[in-house]
Amino acid sequence: MVLLQMNPQHTVPMLKDDDFVVWDSYAISVYLLTKYTDDDALYPIEHKKRALIDQRLHFDSGVLFVALRAAVEPAAYWGENSIRPDALMKIKIAYEFTDKFLTDKWLVGDEITLADICCVATISSLNELVPIDSDLYPNILQWLERCKEEEFYKKGNQPGLEQFSALLKSKLF
Image 1 (cartoon, rainbow, N blue to C red):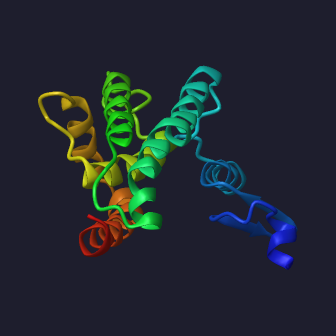
Image 2: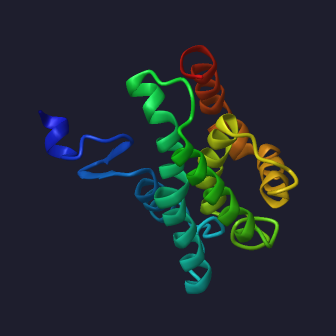
C-alpha cells in the first residue's frame, strides 16, 4: 500500500531520494544528473542542445520503446512466438528515424549525452528482435558499435541486454 501511495502508476523504475519520489527512467536520470553532478556534459544547460536531448528522450519513450513493447508484449503475455506485422513496421519506422538522427558521431552532436545512454538500451533490445540491416541503417550500426566500447554500455546496458536476449531465446521466439 505504501508503494502505491508513493507511485500511483505502480511502475518501475521508481526512485525515493530522502522525501522525494519520482518514477520514469528519464525523469530519474535527469533528476540524478542535475542534483548530484556539477558536470553538465551529459545533459548540458545550453538550451538548444538540451532541447535536442529532451527530444531524443521523448522519441525513445514514444517511438522506440513503443516499437519494442509492440514486438515483445504478444509473446510475453499471450504466448505468441513471432513478431506481428504491425510491430515489425513500428521497428522499421523507429530504425529509419534513428538512422536519420545520427548525422554526427552521437545522437546529439559529437559528444555522448544522456540521449545516447538512454536510447541505446532500447535500440540494442530491438536489435535482438530484428537485427539492424547495415545496408539500410549504417548510421545506427556505427553508433551502436561506438556505444559498445563505452563504459556506460558495458556496465549499464550489457548485463540487462544479455538477460533480455536469454529470455527471448528461451521463452519467447
